[in-house]
Image (cartoon, rainbow, N blue to C red; front, side, top):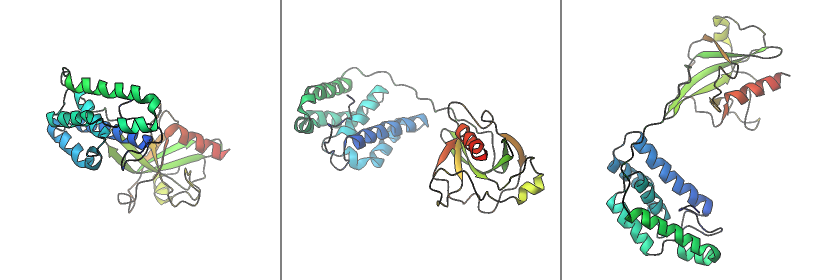
Length: 263
């Protein structure tokens, strides 16, 4: 029974049901860790969390605040003010009233969870843990690269529209080119190819969003999925300002769909 859990069907102030409560506590924990991993100083990371999640951290039941305090403690960074506020929440019963009302059979277990949190906050604190930033994965691609995938009766061509950089690496934005041939055309011919009139889509066919993200899953990148880089062409007007796609697909699944569509 995690610290942030709510009794089934119980409300969590303005936050909502158990799922939302769990999601919120995870968001706070993960965002705090990410700030530290990115080199933000301890005090500044705490202030940023307080600003971003202020409404939730000030709720009377205080589960979000307890999640932050316990996370800080486990990382050896328990802020005295956060600790005191969290202990005040525990002294006030936290969410035990809701558990007693909604699921009294689990009240004893919930009380044990909160007592464990109190012990974490009041006992000897662990040493400060150093959090390393996640290893960024390079896509090995650049805007303008053209990728080819051999299909049973033709070659599929994809243009890298742009590269979206983020803290975990790079995610290319792809556009399928309108090509039905069996041999990769020349660079000049590639420059003239427009977007496919029948692109791979992951949303409703009527959606105007015909571009997609491609990402690595199970360590299968574009090369392992069977794509090869065949050319680099010029950027096109509006590429950098174009809206980012609303969906993505792994390289392996993208290759599977292109092959299946050609059969």
